[in-house]
Image 1 (tube, rainbow, N blue to C red):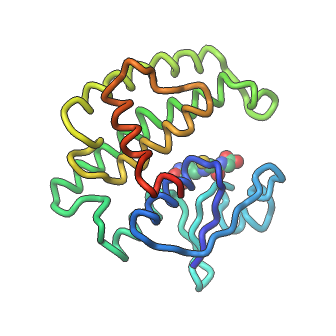
Image 2: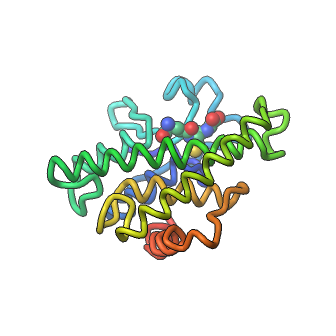
Length: 202
Ligand SMILES: N[C@@H](CCC(=O)N[C@@H](CS)C(=O)NCC(=O)O)C(=O)O
């Protein structure tokens, strides 16, 4: 088994942190996006979406989508549980992970793509849309800040895959102009807490 990785990519980082939390090591190949390796015939045969991460199995089959890859490893090695253990816990963690993808990760990505000069000429940019998403992101961060006044982690009192999704989104946000405002003290507290885990360096 091996992982097609992208060192600075938000989604591949989710899988690397997940594996580090589980204490699982697998060989990986860093795909060179700058050289367009992920849009080449060879990589598109693996994943027609041209995205990373992808998990390749020894029989030559593949699994894409970071959350699907994480779920696969959770099933293989349930401890420590990162998707919950009881039916309700599992459903709550799913809810929070989904919210972190839709309400935090996507706006951070949209702000980056639509407002950052890095993408000029690379992707279509609609600056007004970028500004709308920026305002929505600020609202969502304030909402998450209120939520984190009530508990230690995103989905409860333990670290889960929902924290991994959110922390990777905020790592990207910090590098691309969507830093967490200092006055959102619960969110800042949580961010420092998750970044202090050894897996955060994966
Ligand atoms: N929904 C996919 C998204 C994967 C994705 O978009 N990965 C980015 C890196 S974070 C990528 O490979 N981008 C390359 C491109 O779009 O050309 C997942 O969760 O794995």
